[in-house]
Image (cartoon, rainbow, N blue to C red; front, side):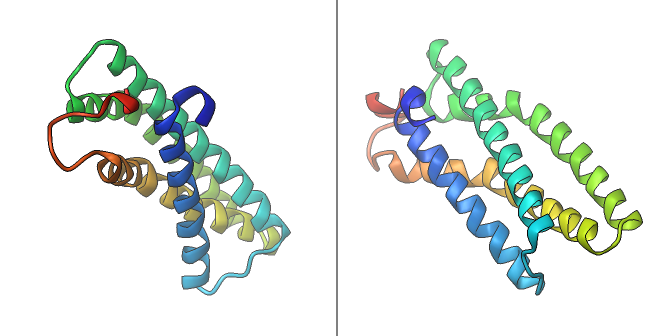
Amino acid sequence: MVGYYRLSGVLAVAALALYVVFTLAGLAGFGFTLTLPGLAGLALSVGIAVDAKRADLRAHSRGTAARQAGTHRRGRGFKHAMSAIVDSNVSTALTAFILYLVGTGPVQGFAITLIIGIAASMVTASRGSDLLHDLARPSTGHGYPERLR
């Protein structure tokens, strides 16, 4: 992502790091231990988070090509990507919930980690990137500096 999207890619990688912190904090907050099936759930949820960031950045770059104004471009790009992100996350969360209900020990650990990871993915996909983009934007002027386009 960094090579293709430049600074926006760096911010996306930072948002993914924030996602991992949120997921591990959620697991620690509920008192869950990270077992081997939990690591598999974490790996799957990281893949889902990367896909969400890629969809968001792709929609963002399409908005850049259309030369829309700064915050509108980011907002409209995420709006277009949001339906796909929500659809994939809801269907995966429902599957993980069913796995938790019918599974035993290790399967439940996988499901819990996946559910917490999906929740953290939604938070960082919707708000984490916006926060990082706003921090990278200069305080004066409107829109993005040329390096973010």
